[in-house]
Amino acid sequence: MNFQKIVLPILGVVVVAAAWRAYGWGGVALALGGIVMWMLLHFTRMMKVLQRASSRPVGWCDSAVMLNAKLRPGVNLLHVMALTRALGEQLSPKDEQPEVYRWTDGSASHVTCEFAHGKLVKWTLFRPPAPSGEGASPAP
Image (cartoon, rainbow, N blue to C red; front, side, top):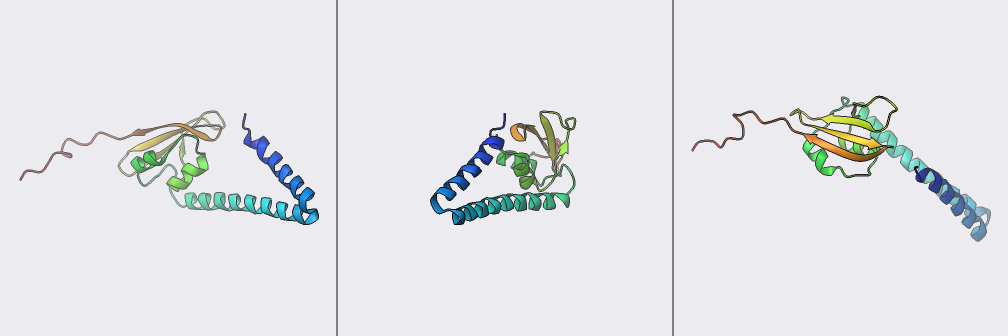
């Protein structure tokens, strides 16, 4: 169960009640103003991430290796979209848990991320094998 859906509204009510008790209607107005500002900041961040993602191909990232290095368990899908600046290619059936998304870069490397209830659980990096001509040291 996602406790944030329960705890955040209760915390908001507690803040408003404490503001009422301490400062009356002025405190309520200040507390509600702060809560609305916090919500607007999150909404603005979400819109900016989605706006940047709309101008890039689905499932694309600049570097899968760098994305792999920046990921950590527990981050949400919006955070990963902010890192890649693109929507992920959805590999799992729609509206089924866990959700699986993939981001690919120009070298055909890709990162496959698994999200459970919106949070990153695990991810894997795939790098294609280098052609036999590459990786050899040049002759003097």
